[in-house]
Length: 403
Image (cartoon, rainbow, N blue to C red):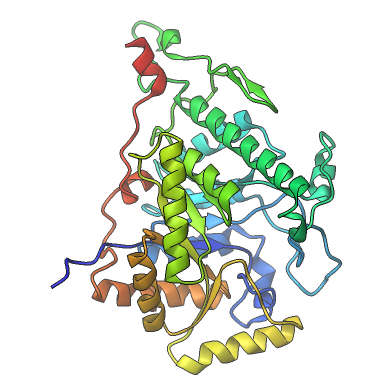
């Protein structure tokens, strides 16, 4: 008889009304509320009801587009969004256990600013913050900042020498960015704040450290102005589709999101990331590899397919994605998740096609099915996101040098 199955981790990726471009036209979609705190609070509360590990919140520095690399002129899809970090800070205090992981574009933001923002999120959530780092090769986004120019880049340019040079540069910059942010989180030792009214000492200045980070694109002196976050190091995550981003996950992240379309692909991706981890000297560290799936979930096997076809007709074209698109029942999805889990994935980030429909289907139908199979928690077992992911609170790198 085989040993008991490994427990799976489960997250959801929240993006507007859902991942299908016509999702906003569904009766459950609440398009008039997409820019309200109540809408986001309801989604995250529903995710917590399902005992999910965390939610990610999509973001970008340009308008949403049907093209991955440039703006489009469409007016029949959701355009406009709120800032993911600020959404996260608003909703985190309304929840108690679930992790909150906003997206940040490293290409045009400052490590010092983001380290402070995510540290603050860790405080307001009492230890449940993370960040999803993302790069941008879009010329229109660079034009919003006017600090650098990027060459024209289309998806088909990815395999060319110039395309590879650009992608490698952006991901190397992201790795430097994460390193600077992590050093800033450590730049205050845990006991740097004394807060002793009797002696009049609030901080111990010797326990604040310059980080003196020098990268190719930026340098950061430090220390942070925000004391060390409750988790020590909030969770860092990234989406990866190929070797260059796999290397970023292996070098810099705690969680990588990948897009295999079957178990064999999942096994190969996990092996590549593990090899890159070893090469980066992190072979003994836990780096979770989550599979991303877009989900259309209905109890009736035909209903999910019919819903997808109806949404495709409204959009005017069949929906495609970088990730596998699952259309079916919660039981069928549970079978698939277990199969992919056996291939080495430790968890999944599900993208609800229609947030108002598919998120409750995940929390109220898929989760109970996984619980019945003994592969998903029946109660939250930790108070921090690191705890939920089985990651210890790390020692402070600078405290070790002064001890």
